[in-house]
Length: 144
Image (cartoon, rainbow, N blue to C red; front, side, top):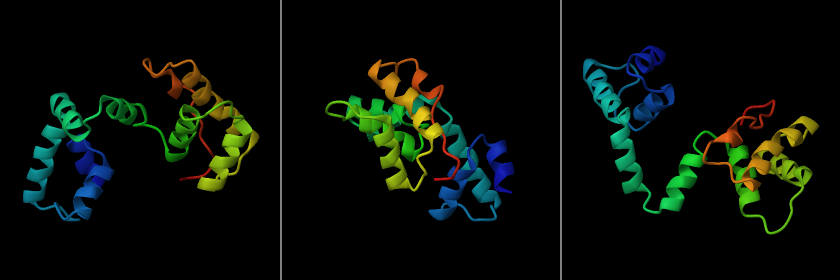
């Protein structure tokens, strides 16, 4: 049922689950709930509203840029990126992979270490503007 509503109103199922969790709509949506979802869909899918909301919600331009830059990253990916952004000196890929393994319970396989490199290397090259750091983002074989 949520999948159908999400598709109809161009929303994610996670957005609908959040509305249910907060008591805004019911698990089995009524006509009133459908009207609410339709109204929210019009607002949330408007780029102008998003721009205003980001400016209002996140005052600092640097924090807005960080938010947008990390929007599609998983928690381990954000950790890796921030680890390199805030590094004082050099960090080895193996060390960062070990830290990700320690904090997120993800085994530091050789492929994971290799797959971290595009995020780290692109940060050193400051290629965020084009979003190139996401082309080869790393993925582990387990869920987070």
